[in-house]
Amino acid sequence: MWIDPWYPRCRGCRGVRGGSVERVFVDANILYSRTVRDWLFALSTSEVQAFELFASEDVLAEVVYHFRRNNPSRSGGSVKALVDQMRELVVMVSRYDCERARTDYLGADPNDLHLHAAAKDGNCSILLTDDRELYAGLSEEQLDSMPYSVCTSDEFFCDLAESSAVLLDQAVTCELRYWSGKHPDGGFDLAGQLAMAGCPRFGYLVKRALMRKSGLGPSDISRICPLDDSYPPAMRANDLDALASISTDF
Image 1: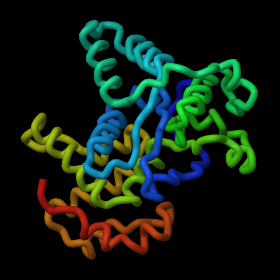
Image 2: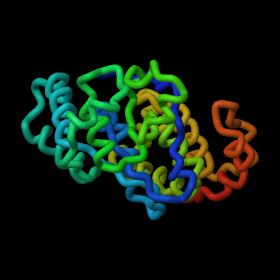
Image 3: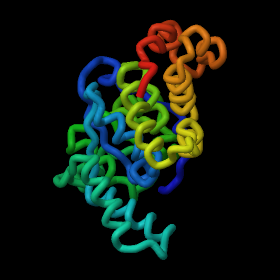
């Protein structure tokens, strides 16, 4: 199922907050988004190693299918570049048993059984998807019984930012350098791009990080752009310290 809204409930990225390296299986709708893909790369190449990304040939094939369907005149070289970029970003799960996984699959779409099978057999603790319908009808008990947490890209990025202001800082620096090189006149909007890609809450955190890099102090940023109650209480309580950890250079 190919939709891209907010997922109704995320169980949270336990290892991200707990300090371990999470094994994260990514759905095709995540890799299809250029903006989300870029931020996954920026976050995964940080000195703070919080997660490792996994995918399957099924997932990559779905991305290519939709890319070609939406871009019928693009060259074969564009498709190859997309595939090469995805393969650089993820570790491939090649062995997974969809027939065996059918016995405990709770998803709404039978065509997404392969996601459950690959995430489970790949020992992944998080399924990263922006498909809100996949597990939308499950109870709390059913969600808790699953072998992995289900997170949207926005939830996952915000969890990473909460876990480490240094990680956020390094990812913002990476993206800032890249886009500054492409648009020396400053004609880009990192926070706006994220909002358009379905990551408004993380985009807001990036906006605040950019304010810090422009030289604004933590107290001023917190006053101008406060964190509302959609962000966890601990994150709001540690806001000034987190902002102070973000460097003022790039």
